[in-house]
Length: 135
Length: 447
Picture 1 (cartoon, each protein chain N blue to C red):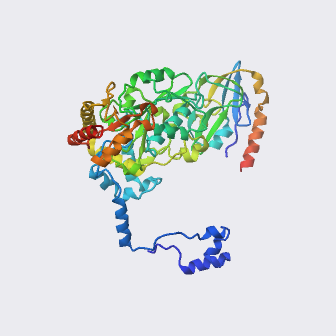
Picture 2 (cartoon, rainbow over the protein chains, first blue to last red):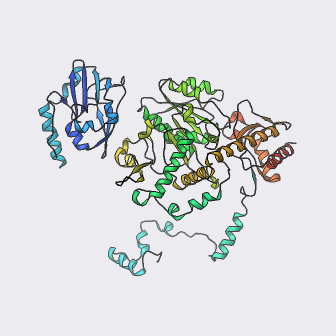
Picture 3 (cartoon, rainbow over the protein chains, first blue to last red):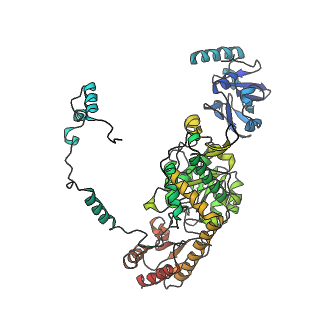
């Protein structure tokens, strides 16, 4: 297994999503650990712009050759942009999970929703622990 | 080769290993009175005697080789060229199971691919699966697909009362627990325009049948427009034979087209097995249940066929799958493909035209009878509604007993508002003489 990368600009959920806040908006995607676990991603089922989700609701399903996995929105809000590039190139999630492989951009209803997320170092430790448990 | 899997010696050895004296001892937990109940059966017969007895029993039934048939209502008697039975009886097709191993299943896979291609042509849609159990289950899968497209955010389905009543029952059974609100099929007064007006932003799809259960032909384009204005899907249940004549539903704006595939090369078979055909726009292909065969190339660049997206439902999506139906009616779909290939485009058009013209001839003959009226306000295909002067069951009973004619479907059975109305079906199999004989018989039995 390759070393797990984390992006220092992001916050992390226990369900392996990352969130990068930019003002009242945030980008979200799945972590490097998540994409490694899923292996080759073949399809990303994205929500539509304008869809609204509560904190913890499923907003997207990522499908690999091994499994289909739901992604949970880390904070309540409205989808303002989806990564259309993933329709033709779902492998971007594998290649660049924190960059070109982002899933959606959303407007945060309440930044306090992000209070229970993990800092990069804490997530790195958490993911390492998870990996330990799986091997 | 022996067909008895275990010798007495092997059975004795196995019993000894598990410490049981006799096989009967394995059933001791079953209460004694239920263990070997006395069954009142006649003495054993020889094979010759059994054949004679069964033949005598079967000859007490009547079948369509000995009757004149004007019954349709979802299962249709069309001519099946003998090549169909010959091809599907080849052991390579007849005994083959799921073609999971493409390197040894190219024939089966190619046949399914041809079937899918022809269904796409007929429906005017992008992708077809390898078939469902029957028309009713195909409709249920269409509903589930439409619900899945909106990921549970829309829970209203608008459906016409003129969709086959048994399909609607199947659909409701399949989708119990989905929290779907079905509207539109409880009110006989609603027109298709009224139905289209019921579509709102919470509606996943509008379901209509064309030709509808009463044989009537409708324009789908205005329904597609009204449905798409709310970003909902238009689902069309159709008769594949009628598609030899009518504009393809996909070309009129349908997003999903499905129906009973039995009329394509499958005999009536006492009600089954049949096949449901199912086609949709490509954007929904990942939500399509069942099996899908795709064309690809092997490492040498040669054309080949494989189950594509094949493991998704069972192995990858699992509980997230749109549906866990992953089987198909392989042999029936093959019969449909052979039938369509044998007839060709012109042949199918000809069958459709014969059905249409003969049905209209029959309608004209019956409309001339005293006491009978034919519903002719809307164009119809091979079935039409006749208002009768006597109860339909009584007319049918006398047609059968006195004239050896299987009469039309008694609409009062599913539509209380249509008591006294008969749905007659005429296909290319009915001769002009049979049609005149039907008119004459109807005159006699209602005199």
